Image 1 (spheres, rainbow, N blue to C red):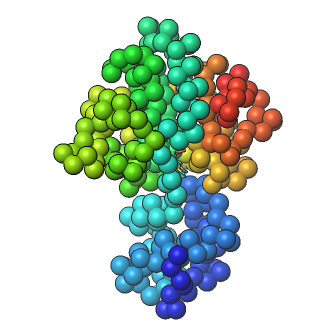
Image 2: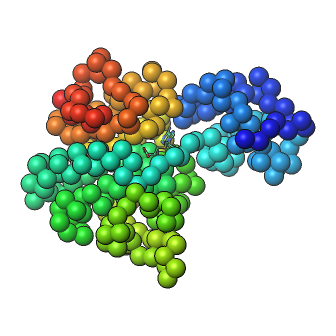
Image 3: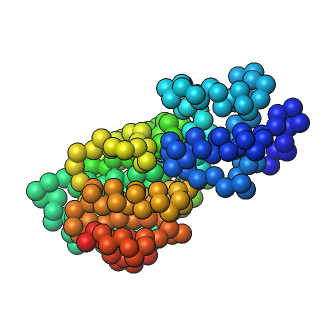
Length: 275
Ligand SMILES: C[S@@+](CC[C@H](N)C(=O)[O-])C[C@H]1O[C@@H](n2cnc3c(N)ncnc32)[C@H](O)[C@@H]1O
């Protein structure tokens, strides 16, 4: 970790102003323990813009439409993810799809929302799972993959990953779903897999979401951990509107839905059914 630079001080007031802006706009709660993280993630921006203090930097955000907002939000989100992260969820998805969704898809396409998709691994894992379950490379599936962070969305759209990033995949999966360079160092998701997914920017905390239709499955994993209880409850109430009865919601392994949320019933391993 970088040490604090003597020439720039992140005062308590600066930290609180940053935490306030972040919470109000995207719901992320920053505890005092995140002061170093904030410093390290914003200091390069202050230097590159030749500013003399964090206070000056915060002023750049006075205008809600200032281009700096994008950099600010991209810098302060945490985007850790991987292919088939929490692998039991993809087994549960495959089971649910084969029992319920294949039949349903005879009359309408299956709609999945991957709502905090980061660099794309989660959305591609959903697509690969459904390709395997439906037994064809072009299943009747539409996946909406969204995130707040525009940098990660750009990476997700490209769909290029290193050998290390593909370590959870078997050789057979790599061959089936990726093209690779001659040295086998970089792998690009095949166009047929990409064709199932639309990547878009969406703030989960915004008052209105642009989608008109409900989803058969929503993945909202490892993002609620950054929100406080009240924000989590509001988000879950909104998600419930986007799920018809019996549809499934997947959340992260360290997240939970309180028993006061009567819209969801736990079906096992942080997979919930809309009731
Ligand atoms: C730790 S990653 C989780 C990625 C993936 N869901 C997984 O479980 O592997 C959290 C993601 O949530 C996104 N995020 C944070 N706040 C958000 C918000 N208000 N709206 C939409 N996405 C948000 C971040 O940009 C980040 O990519």
